Image (cartoon, rainbow, N blue to C red; front, side, top):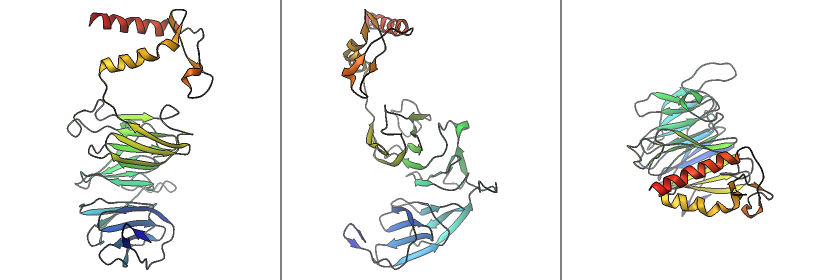
Length: 289
C-alpha cells in the first residue's frame, strides 16, 4: 500500500484494522491482533509492539508517546522506538471489574497539550500529562453517553465528541481560546438544524479551527463558527421576519416542504402573543440605542 510517495511493504498479516494514525515518522495501526507500526525510514518493516486487541490509536507529530486502546487495556508506547512503556486496565462492563478507564475504548485522540482523550460507552476519560485520569459523564455536563468518536479542534484544542445521535463540543477555557463565548461548557448539535439523516455520526474532521466537518448517515455538513455583531444579527432576523407576520402579530411558521422556507404557512397559536412581545421588547431596545 502507499502513503504519499512512500511505498509500504507490509510483512505482517493484520486482522481487521480498526484505526490508524500517522505521526510524521510512523503509521500506527489498531487491529484485532494488536497494535502495529510501519516506519517510514525502512519502508518495509512492521513491528507489533503489543498483541492486545486494539480498536483505536492516538499519536501526534513531535509527541513523546503514542497510545492504543481496546476492550481490555490502554497502552502507552515510546513514539520513537515503539517500545511498550505502560498499560492500564479498562473497566469490564460485563463483569464490573474496575479499571482506570470507564469502559472499552471506542476512540481516542491526543491533544497538542499532551492530554489523551479516550471515548468509552460510559464516559469520556482524559489522561493528563502527570498520569492522572479524569472523566466526563452526565455529572460533568456531557450531554449524551455512548461516545463513539472524539477529536480535538485545531489551535484551540476544544474537545469534540460524537454519540449515535449527536455531536458535542467542549469549549476550551478563555486562556486557550480568548474569544470563547461559553468557555468550559458543552454545546450539543442534533437534528436537522445541524446534522443530516438521523444524526448518527461516522466521522469528524477538526483540521480547521473555525470549521468542523461532520459525516453522518445522511451526508456531509460543515459546522462553521462565525463572529457576528449585534447589528448584523438584528439585520438577519429582520430579513426573515416578514414570513412570520400574521394579522400584525408574529406567528409560528410551519413548512410544507422540509428545508424550504418559502413553503412557510402561518397559523393561530397561543404562543403568538409571546413571539410578538419579544419583538416589541427588541424594538424598544433598538429605539433606545
